[in-house]
Image 1 (cartoon, rainbow, N blue to C red):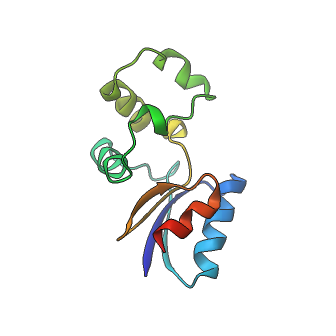
Image 2 (image 1 turned 60 degrees about the vertical axis):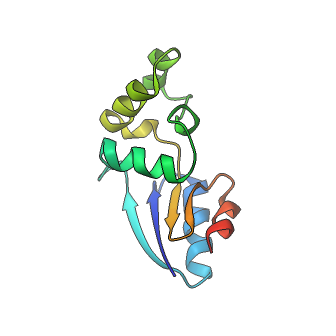
Length: 111
């Protein structure tokens, strides 16, 4: 099985999700999304596959999220594309679907 993880190596949840994927023998593509952010369209497609709204995938604790309290989904997607730190992590995608792996054990839903 192949998985793609949108990963931040400084995040303990992201590291734990990656470890679970590796332990399961999954072929993993690691995308350090802060260095190589998904495009707005790619992010929209991932969230659609995960059945999540942009607001549900927004890291609300980040400073850049404060002005987005009343933003539309389109505005949130624009902000996430411009400031990838706003994207909740880690996002894991396989042929079975997409999840935000918080808690990291959610990756088992995709294996």
